[in-house]
Every structure is written in C-alpha cells, then in structure tokens.
Amino acid sequence: MKTPLTRGWWQARRELGWSRLELTAAFSLALAVWAVGGIGVGALLDRYPPRALLAGGSALAAGLVLAWSQVHDRVQLYLVFGGLGIAMAAVLYNSVFAVVTKWFRLRYREALVAITLVGAFSSFIFSPLAGSLTVEFGWRAALAILAVLLGAVTIPLHAGILRAPPITTLPENEPDDAGQVRAAITSLRFWLLTASLALGSYSWSVVVVQLVAFLSDSGHSLQFAALAAGVVGLGQLPGRLVFIFFGRALRGSRLPAATFGLAALALAILAVNRSDFGVLLFAALFGTSAGMMTLMTASVPAELFGRRVYGGVSGVIYAFSNGARAAAPFISAVIATLPGGYSTLVGSLIAISIVAALLGFLALSGIDAQRDI
Image (cartoon, rainbow, N blue to C red; front, side, top):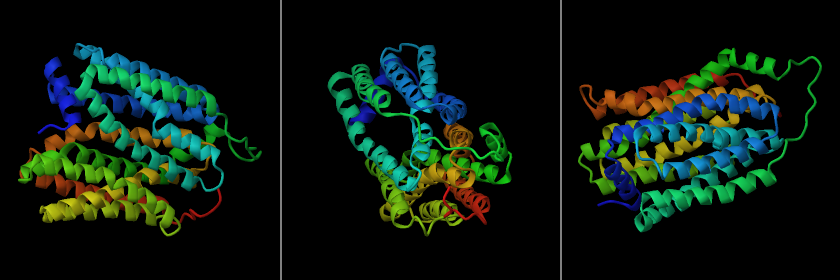
C-alpha cells in the first residue's frame, strides 16, 4: 500500500530509472552544501540586516524547486540539490534562529519555541498537500505548483517584514565581532557543545532513515512502521513545549543531560521491547528528545557566547550537525551490515546518545544560563 507521498517518490524513481541510493545521495549533497554554506550565512547575518539574504534565499529556493520539476539526468539532479543546499542555508532554522535571537532581547526562548512550533505544524499542511498534488497531477507538476507557492508566500514576507535588529553598542574593552567569534570557536566549551549536537543530529538522521527498515526487519508491517515514524515526528511538539513549562528547570548542564539521556532511554526501550507498545513508546520519547535538541541548538549558543556573534558561532555548529546528518545514511547502512544487523545499529545509537549527553553536560557545566545576555 502506497501513501500519497510514497507514491510520488515511486513515480519519480520509476520515471527516471534511478536507485534509492542515488536519490538519497542528492539529498545528502544538499545537506553537505548547507553545512558549508551555513558558516558564511551566519557571518553575514552578524554583519548585515537579514532582509536581502532571506528574500534572496527564498527566490533561489523557489527557482530551484521549479528546476527540480524538470530534471532528466543525474547531473541536473545533483546541480539542483547542490543549489538547494545554498538556499537551505539561507532560509532554514540556522538563519531564522539567528534573526530571532538578535531581535528578541527578552524572552527569546519563547520566541524560538513559537517559531519551531509553526515549523513543526507546517509538515501537517505540506506533506498531505504535496501528496495530494502528486496523486492529482504527477510529481513534476506537484513540484512546479509548490515552487510557485513557495515564492509567492516567502519572498514578499522576507522582503517586506524583515529589517535590521536593534543596534547595541560594543564596549571599548571588548573585541570586535571577528575577535569574539575566534574566541568562541577556539574554546573547549564550543567544541564540546558542537560534538554533542553533531552526535545528536547523527542519531536523529539515522532513525529517520532506518526506522521503517528496522521495524520491517523486526516483523512489523509497513503500515505500522510508517505510523511509528509519524509518531517520532509528532513527538517533537511536546519536546518543544517542554521549553515553555520546564525552561528554568532545564537550564545549564541539565538541558543536554535530559535531552540526550531521554534519547538513550528511548533507544534502550526499542532495543529490548519491539512490541507495538514498546515501539510507539520509543517513538514518542525519541521525538520529544529531538524537539528538545532543536531548541537546545537554537538557544545555547547565545547563552554561552552572546548574541552579537550568534550567527557566526551557530553557523559553525550547524556545519558539523548537518555534516553528521549528511553522513548518517551511509554510515548507518554500513553498521547495519555488521554482525547483529539492526540490533548492532541501535546499540551504537545508545552509546552515541550517552556520549552526547556527557559532552553536552561538560560543555555547560558551571555556566549560569539564567544570566541576562
């Protein structure tokens, strides 16, 4: 049984005659370009107002999605997805978080939660819409329609609403932005935090890519595996709401310990209990952890290194996180071929989550995260 979205994916693969690995490689290329491009985008957002960058990125994204609808060979596909990586760096969470963090001097955590909640709910709108368009008009026409919609909504909003953040005066005894970025990215705390988030991003990507295959291998139906994957995505919503209701309790080193500790617990449940209940419990807990990680990635750099250089610092952090996401499908496929198969893969993810929790705890140890930045 094919859902609307999987039917569209199947249509594209059948028409183009390409393997799943070739299409996965295109998306990994986009993530890799995003990883590198995000560093430059962050530096630009520290120096210039965001309007031109985000409006231009939206225009580029719309044009490339339209171009995607017309690809006929692999070179065209990889060129389009390489360009989409640049657009992703300009308009997705890394740049949006930088804009929000610089704009909201007070209660910026609440602003970040609001942004991520809207982003999470968008999948409930556009996944069914994309599937319905694919069923009705075919995958090429569906992409063309979505490209027009993307440009018509996002370009005017970015061009008309975004403006420079409030100006702050830099004290004479403080280094300039470049000096602050260098001081941040050469610190031990920065690299502990970056490694922690990269490991968490790797685990998230592995689960997204491998969960359906893992559950099918464990004897579950494809429909149930798809349901569990949906619960993982839905579970991100309560993870983001945690920041509203338990924000003060989870400041400082408690945040990464709770975030990645919850991921390790969820994976441990999956390792020992693959009943329907055990799988759904895993999915809900792991999704909650992923939602917490999104907001941890957004908020902690400002708490550790300040808002002035948030773009440059977070750009480097996202570079490593997105690089880990890009590599995850290939590394996890290799691990799944080792003795023990998917059980070995799940065990490796438990160990990685524990290490991520420890590194994050060390990165934030002794930090008074409740100070006013």
